[in-house]
Image (cartoon, rainbow, N blue to C red; front, side, top):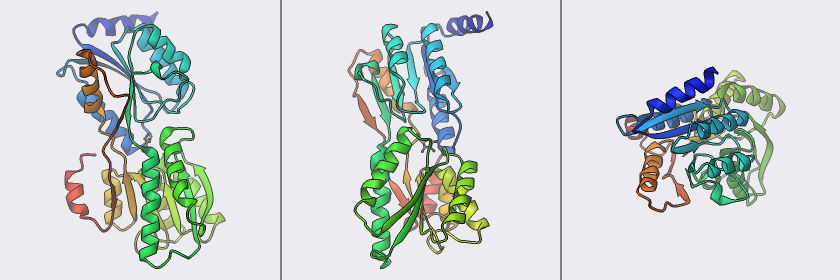
Length: 314
Ligand code: AHR
């Protein structure tokens, strides 16, 4: 049939190259676009790679199909950025049985047997959540608000994804230390701007005194900001509502410069070269670290944002 024919042709075209089958989450955010681009720029024919790229459109079932198709095509490596953490045991066992190493990037997999994948490269999402909480505690303290009741809401990412679970968990640890912080509601907006705007509109209609919005990515912060402005309120350092975000993409720096975002925790999407390094190590028969964290910082309006924006590539 047509699919098999196409797969055979692709396998023939890949002769002499290291073939990598990449199952990406989707294209839900600016961060995701930068992450995909990092892999497309790294896994080029010029660098000796043949990349099979599949966008899963945020659906695990599409990823299961993609991984099985990579196995059929006998790729050299499978690169998986899993939408959610669980449900991977069978397909990873199939890859292992076929002798194909699986590198997991960005989000994690939770499996019964860690040998089902070679290694994971990504962000320390719990630490990101903690950094956001600690920053907020310090910010409120320096403004003499550490004893005030502070009402918060959280726009969560895709439920059961590592980025959502880790950020929620890390922030919750700091939340638990502050009895005057009142988390009014958590709701997922799937890491997208449109859904975040809708959820934020509902939050604003339901809760008249929101002090802080935790946005588990920048695109959701953009949606929240639009909803806040439409409701006739303001946000950012001089506004009614404090906005905390995750990712730190260029457009978020611009929003911060415009005084709409208070703080963001960086999530580094440039994972392509790191994964390529790992593949080269494996090609040389070397052992690789099971876990590799990306370097990440946080940013707020007290910093030199002009300099950061100049050097930001995404
Ligand atoms: O898994 C990383 C997260 O997924 C990013 O924070 C978010 O923007 C993306 O959609």
